[in-house]
Length: 189
Ligand code: PRP
Image 1 (spheres, rainbow, N blue to C red):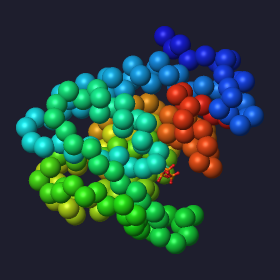
Image 2: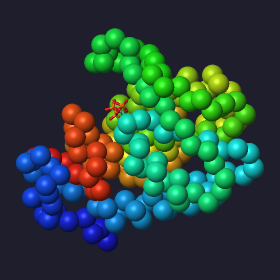
Image 3: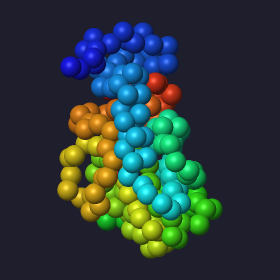
């Protein structure tokens, strides 16, 4: 049974810069429940060895902070900041790290945390780059997956929700850097 409201009460939400919500895709309570499940899945997945949870900024910052508090094993946290080379509309570019994690990756279990998989291009490039650092394992945890494309060459081991093909904001996702702080995920009118 879904409890997602179809007529959102947040239409007059003062955080929305006067915009109106078309639909709340995932409520704060739904997200919290699913993140707790993901935390249990991640906890159960890893045996021995060091776990480094790597968040891709900026979109993953809220999801990562909630997720790591649901993982009941030792871990470390670091972040990546990536930028695409050249024309961002061209799919064949490579990725450049604006912030490269200071933590050693070799020999560790790396869990790359992403807010949303859209075309999969960002993850393809980052996974290639991280694989070259010789981690013990390398897995993806994405809160949202649009399942639009077959471009992603790596499996997404952990997925929170299948996402609608809409422009989503909130819980880390932005529109022109706004709305990242909404505690729910919504599409705007
Ligand atoms: C968004 C999102 C993912 C990526 C997904 O990042 O956070 O990282 O796009 O798209 P893809 O699957 O088509 O590559 P964005 O570049 O908007 O940066 P942000 O994380 O700072 O919002």
